[in-house]
Figure (cartoon, rainbow, N blue to C red):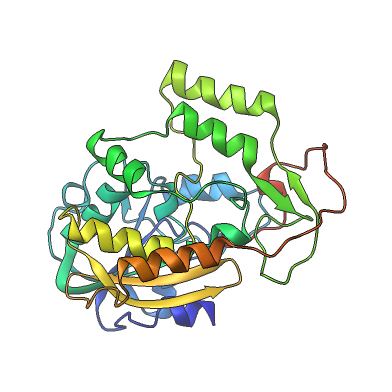
Length: 292
């Protein structure tokens, strides 16, 4: 079902890109998709990275373009070339979200589509982190962010949680929340940013469905992106699904309706936490693997 939702607008006879699929491609070449892979490492390096992660290494496909921070047009050498792009759980990692979307739009044909699977912060380790607002997204773009700020790193490491032994869950999942990282880990990763200007891979942006839909609407209305909502599917499990295109109709709700929807989505019923956990669970990769 998940794969069907992500592929619902993908033309099997078209040429596409899948961004950062690592060991779980959704449109693999072995299934006949005409697809180019963009990732931050070669296949050999990805195999090395995931050797101890208990995943099927045979699923890792040859990487066509290894991204080192350049624009996608520079990386690929062509503009308006692709019919579709798949990005599953990558947009929330981008230091410059607007730049990421514009990179995609630049290599996409005018009638092309971007299929996004996006974690819903209510049902993953971002549960207690604030929703990302328009201001921080716009500021990151004009500041030309290529790494995450020390403040964002601190917020992430001090607030991400597991629910039971899961770092992502569905709405009916039961379990106690437990902090994943320690204060020392937060300090160490902040030092990587402040002292070495290193990229630390975390979720920069947190969304509920309506907050992401409003963000895309506002970014388009402000002339910062050329993409509009073409299709939307609500949260299932820990993620929701959005298709964007240059020719999409855009979200059909008003800003006030979306703002009200955001309030509704984040208004969780009162929950009695059985006990507060001071202990720290294993690092994220050691917990049960999920799409988020």
